[in-house]
Amino acid sequence: MKRETFKVELPISCRFDYPTVVELDQQISEYRQNELGLITPSLKPVPRNTKELPISLTQLELRNSRPPI
Image (cartoon, rainbow, N blue to C red; front, side, top):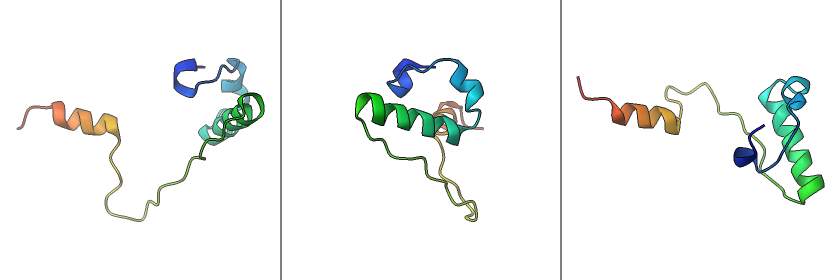
């Protein structure tokens, strides 16, 4: 797992033991609370019933880097 991203070092087996993002998030949160004493906010779902969804940073960068048509 990426130490720089999550600020924790988990065994690679966690990727297979907890295959979904929610399960992995729970495992990382538990580790941070138990081992490091840190509390992190949980992932929150974004409602999908709106016309426009928030754009990710990557999408924003991609949109800004393309030349206009």
